[in-house]
Length: 491
Ligand code: C2O
Ligand code: CU
Ligand code: CU
Image (tube, rainbow, N blue to C red; front, side, top):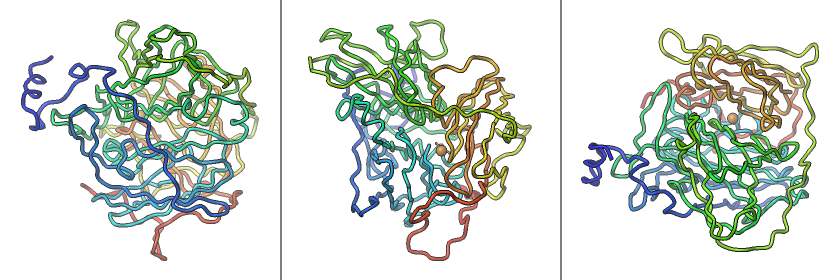
């Protein structure tokens, strides 16, 4: 223990110093599973939800209280379970003292429901988000997207899971119910009194305490059978390299936008901010009494440098009627045929120390590109910096065509919405513009970079293909300007 940490621990409540991972014993607290939200009303074709964004306290570190900003008091936020083909309307009331806007990451939604960084919900206001759920089953998530304050708002707790299910996936008989478990990975810094030690930074926001579903390095008691885990990297800047300490491969079955074509074993799974990996772990390989650690092998070649995320403890025998079929789904391959629209996005830091795309810092009033509905486009992310940028595109799902430095991993062969762009590397992705017209973002999902201004805005044009009953908007006001929040508020 360093001197400063020891001193801080001796003076509880002062808020001085930080709690480090070494101060915490791993595997002492049980894994918590975020509550699933219930609608306030079910209509014939849609479900209505209401949620309040408000302050709360959570016991994240044992015996300490952490002030959080939450959806309905829960850290992370409550999980929303959606069914393909059935619309969801969510009224979000902002009872915080700061503005916020909620994005559905990976969602194909009308732009006024997309959590545009300029469509803020002011304190006291309510905004209605409309989610059509026309897309295939996938593990999505929702989180704050406020201009310049995404980092702080997410750090305080404004993020949760949004899971879409569909019939095709149900028919596969993958582990379900209690055996289908989300794992939200976050890293945080804590003051010794338990409060979050957030600092707005330009390059990275890192914490050395690893949280899974809001608990530090928890344990989960499991039966000796198959489980499905939906792993989301909801961290600000940290990329993980997931491994099991047993040395067994992780069997990946899904990525950002749902299932892969087939189960794919990997020695490790790299997972950068906002990426998702779904895995099946078959605990029938291990005798009752076994303990298996899910860990972050980090960048180190040295396997002893791995750091624990959580531990599975096989404590009972149970029958397993679930399956892991050799084929999960058909994935139509998008091809860069002649005539596709090609764009390049150069990623680097400018002379004033801001992260920029093609030389420009984010400006909510500026449209950077205008893709057309129905078009197929190939985007090249050209990283001219020495750090990784996890690049994310709203509205569309894409496929990774190639990387300049590496082969595309088989676990990246499915539909994605966020892709890791390694230092000094180029990555090409291909997508088709479907769904809705309007203003959407593309950006780096390292939230430090995003806030410091590695984001662009596209206006998708053409005739909207999708019908919805509504597009979303402010509740209780008829004349709403297009972009009431100009992204220049200081706090
Ligand atoms: Cu998950 Cu534009 O973000
Ligand atoms: Cu998104
Ligand atoms: Cu970045």
